Image 1 (tube, one colour):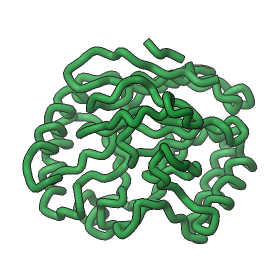
Image 2 (cartoon, helix red, strand yellow):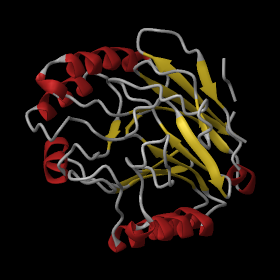
Image 3 (cartoon, helix red, strand yellow):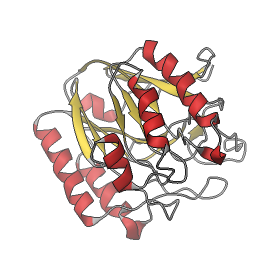
Amino acid sequence: MGAVTLFPAALRAAEPLRLCRFVVVGDTHLGRKDNDQAERQWAKAAAELKAAPGDFILHLGDVVDGGRVAQYPIYRRIRDGIGKPVHEMPGNHDPVEVFEKALEIKADRAFDHRGIRFVMLNNSRRDSHGGFLTEKQITWLAAQCSEAAKKNLFVILCLHVPVHANKHPDRGWYVKPKDGQKAFYEICARHRKHILATFHGHFHNGIRGWDDHGGLHEILFPSILYNLNRGLEAKGAPGYNLPEFRPGYTLVTVEGRKMTLRYKPLGAEVKASKKLD
């Protein structure tokens, strides 16, 4: 069991959080390869999520595959059977205008829950695996973090594409300095007392992450459809990659000064969890 607990430095600098449980899913890719495999995986996950502990669900992008517009109503029908709020963001497979219309939400938005502000920011494009942040988005992000600090809220930043630079043997998909990386990290440094972590999808590598930017926890989450074991730890890649790669989702608990991530494979028991200090 590769178990570790999240004690971010940020938590030590503010008031204790109340108990907060939620679930993180990602990369459902409905319509992939023009068959119903992804739909069946999402339906299987939805049946589990209905009973899973957690007040709500975060979906970190790639709702459908390859911009397949007809898949959004299918995704939504299955989602609506879960019986708890699901907060989606687009990924590089989701045309933003179609995503917003089909799910009746804005791509960039924020909500507060039990002392945490969740900021969802669309940093992906259909024509690239890389990430991009506009000046307008950077300004909005800074304002969200400043407001959260004034209200003594912690912050979790959700972006489909990681900001963290990663090279071989990783995928090399991230926000380049010229595309907003520098400004993003400046905001994180300025609000370090309040920002707990950044959450991302996109990689299909299970739980993968880094904490080498001033202790900021940058975490990639598994796909419900498929994940790949790229042997990152054996190849000496920086950061960590839990030894679990089955399709699944993550049960997240924040309590006081602890955050725990539990990797839940579909149809199986939790065998891996992560706690970061």
